[in-house]
Length: 72
Image (cartoon, rainbow, N blue to C red):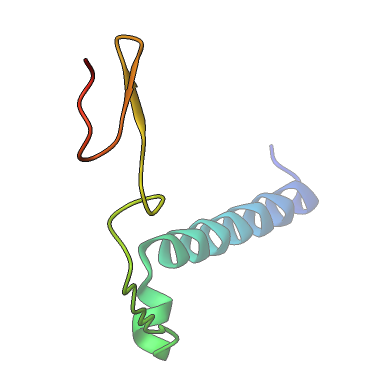
């Protein structure tokens, strides 16, 4: 037979588990942000995007070359 103390502990554990799992699931799916309107918008202007440097250089088969130069 389960004593009254053990029964209370099991109910408390089950309640805390259900609340914890529900909270983590709602946070993970982003429902809280949708309901409370906690989202944010990021805007950026990258005028010179498209290359990691102004004149990228590569090395193919031991030859160095830029955009307009060819390996002889």
